Length: 106
Image 1 (cartoon, rainbow, N blue to C red):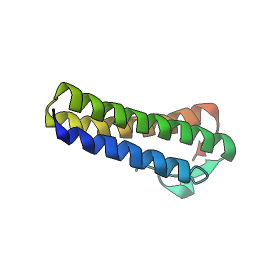
Image 2: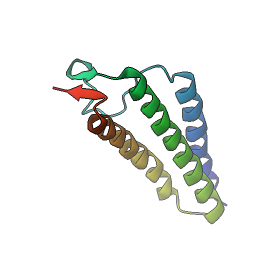
Image 3: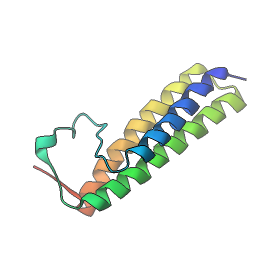
Image 4: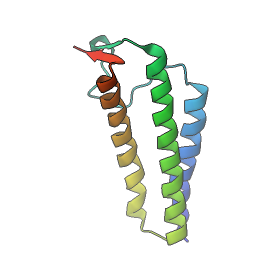
């Protein structure tokens, strides 16, 4: 049993609580697209709803990866997978919002 798997579980639970409490706040986690002066939000309510869905998906992934690390006694290197996939999911949020027309980048 690898107890280092508790870290992704705690990260997932804390991020789930944060995302539900701050669901009406625009958050950025991608440096490339985080310049506020270049981004214009066209449909705010749809953007916030999609952001909340992606945040819940991120939290669920972190919790599941932590559980798998503990159950299957995976190496500590698998703990690094959670932040990498977390960033990938946040990047896919930006791409999805651009495709649906919720945001506009100059």
